Length: 297
Image (cartoon, helix red, strand yellow):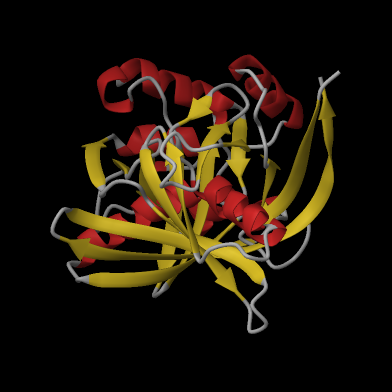
């Protein structure tokens, strides 16, 4: 029998049993790809991470991120939570980590309290903002399970965007639409079938309503088993970049609140800045530990 230590944390929250859950295997050496995927399915969380030695010794680690059904190139809250776990376990931890991931090198900076204790982290999206196709209002409304009138199009149509992770369909909605939304799996499947090139065979919907520097959000990704996500860093960063794109400013910052309707309120501090290579974005927040144990195989 082989035993592999794991830690679970709640990410983007200062309160246990809030935020987005994450399982982290700090030393995944010896696990096969199939075993990593099986463990992620067993935990049944939106993501589980596995930490391995880096291929390039100048980097901090190689981090593999799995959702319930497949490996991901990049995700936000898994990077924040993984850095938090590594930082809490090593009192001499560096100020920042550089993780090797399929989407590229991911920079994660630790956040500490006045006493120097690690309380969270901020992750940089690995690539500049990439704005994709727009999709019909009727499609976004059907996926969200809300009337078309609840989609706000004054600033933009439902728009696909990404910055290293899965692209998200960014859709502004009314406050009433945000509260009433409930994902329709059939509509998601139809959307992928009707727009295969734009969706690349996958669709994740990120709806939001904006009130100045605060943004309320909800994320639905039922095609991979995540009916709703409590906090989605890899959606917050393209949204921050996209909002900066719309505003026309050089930089901006937003407090994004997600997971309220699930009973797991999360706070993501997102920011974006124009650079020569394009719009770059970051998202950060606090984490709290919940469980420790071993998986026996």
